[in-house]
Length: 62
Image (cartoon, rainbow, N blue to C red; front, side, top):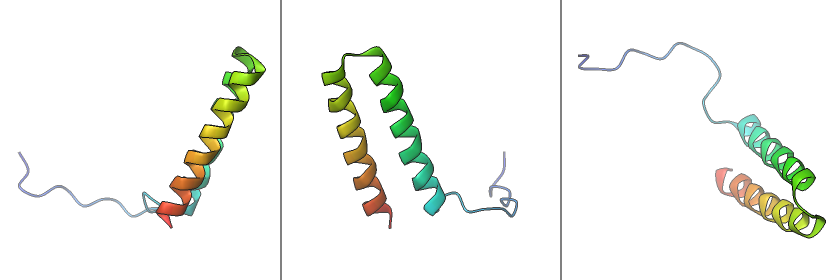
């Protein structure tokens, strides 16, 4: 077993502004996908919650 973890190779940071954008895009895409499956009322409800939580996540991250 390692006493210390090996150093991480250089590269982009794990968390950055583009990661938040990616999460928001993923959530919006999932909302649209769910909208295709569920009735329109449920679609608007789910998309609204996804956007609200993505917005909260973006605000808390920065």
